[in-house]
Length: 376
Image 1 (spheres, rainbow, N blue to C red):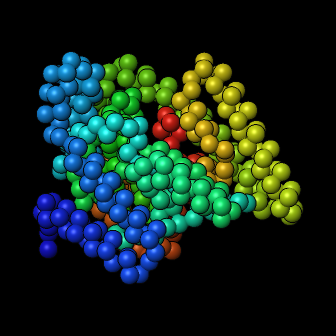
Image 2 (spheres, rainbow, N blue to C red):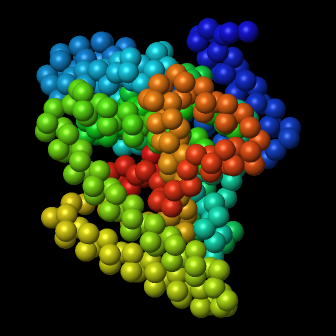
């Protein structure tokens, strides 16, 4: 049965509400509270959204020319996504909400003290994922503190956007609408890609696919619709991100080697502290090279942990494979999406084998936004 969007949204709300009630009987108060804040938080975001044309008019009436211009640009990017990249032509990113906060959610990532393996949480619909999101920063910080008391490394990351996988019409938000033009396009393309294909329990597959779509999409947007100034600005922005990404990759590899070395835990802890101190020193050198650009300072606001690096490690693992597949499809987006769905339907082992046949997995870490957050 093909559901209409409104019916699907209604079913999603009922399912989520019913799930929260059911967990009263099968889980503790922590689980019930988590689902309650998730449902309430998302519905609160949706309630603040207004049609893009109305939001632009409101901005103009308030003499906020900057916001009006950004919303108009976002509308063009959204139309481009469906017209040129064949991404879903629905109500997502055709409404705007000002949440009056810097992020829409705060995600908690965790690893063991001497390991780069991310802890996973399992949920209905989305399956098992490597983070736990909160609509209030204080709640995320409190949960991270509880994980630290259990001996885990925990990291709280502010997230500017997320996808509901098409169950709701996700709105544009103040948390990302002011990003540089190319970065705004990248984020919209990435989140819409999650509505095309989503495989339960396979974060690396999902994020790599969306990242491949965003990369190809942004290149096309910059070439066809962006101004020369916007192209130059994004190239500089992306070059800095690539340098920071390389620094994180080097650090992650050093930590991985340390934790697998034949030494005792005390030596590993000492080595860990030295590696993180060196990461801060190397970042300081990068900032000098960047003439004082501070775009990734927030990433260092908390004490550095394994979770910082593990949180961004899987976002590009299979990007070379998906990029190769797109080339094999001669840039035919519907054909590409059909092939991705076919691979996604395979068993995990068969899926990885199919992707390896397309291209070896990437060794670079995940896509980052200017705030040093993993992009979702």
